[in-house]
Length: 288
Image 1: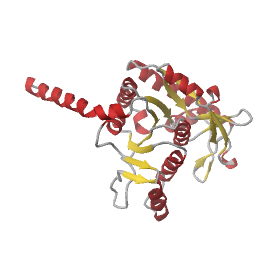
Image 2 (image 1 turned 180 degrees about the vertical axis):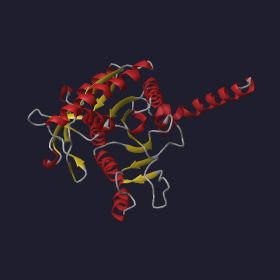
Image 3 (image 1 turned 60 degrees about the vertical axis):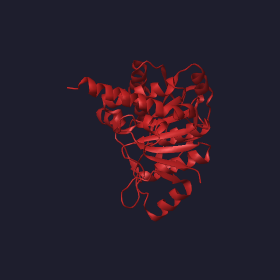
Image 4 (image 1 turned 90 degrees about the vertical axis):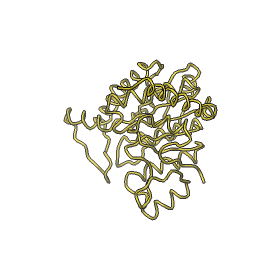
C-alpha cells in the first residue's frame, strides 16, 4: 500500500512530466497526426481503452488526430465462421466479391464502431467512416490477380477537414471505391499513408507488434532516412513484413508527410511518448 510520501512523489513526478511536455504540446498545436491502429492492441479491452484515452488527450491539447484501423484477425475469424474460403497469390489473399462483402461488414461494422465507442467513452467525439464515404478514397486495382484489392489513387480530404473544424475525430476503415463504383479492400498501412500524404500530416504513426525497425544485431534503430531504408532493404537488414511498412513510410514522406514513426502499439501510451517526450518511441523516419 502506498504511503502519503509515495503518493506525493508520484504527483510531483506527474507534474514534472507535464511541465517537460510543454514545448512538445506547443509544437503539435493544430498539427495533423494520422495513426494506423492495429495488431494486438485492438484485441485487448484494456489496450483499446488506453489508446482511446491517448487519442482524446491528443485532441484536447490541440492535435487533429485521424485513426485508420485494420482488422485482419477479425476478418479471418468471420470468413471461417461463414465458410468463405480464401485463395492466395504470392502470400496475398485474393479478394473476390464474397470476401469483400465480409471485409466491409467486419471493418465498417464491428471493428470501426468498437473504436468509435471507445473514444466516445473517454469523453471524445468520434465518427466512423470508410474510404467509400464522401468519396474519401478512390482506388485502382493493386494487382488484377488479387481481385478487389485497391491502391489509393485519389484522396478527397474535404470531409476530414470538416470533422476537424467540428472537433470530431475521424475513425476510418480501409475500404475504397473503384472506378466503376465497386468496393475495394485496401491494406491498412497503405490507406493510412495515402491519407496522411493527402493531408500533408505532420506525423504518421504506424502502430505495430514490434518495437521498431531493427538492425542486423536486432537493436531498434531510432532514426532512419528514406535513403537508408532503400540501402537496408537491398542488403536484407529490412526484410519480411517490415518491407511493405517501410515502403509505406517512404511513399508517405515523398507525398509530403513531415515524418513517420513505426512504434510498438502494445506499449502503454506509445503515441503520447512519441509526440510529447524527448525520448520518443520506435523508429523515426524522415526524408533524406
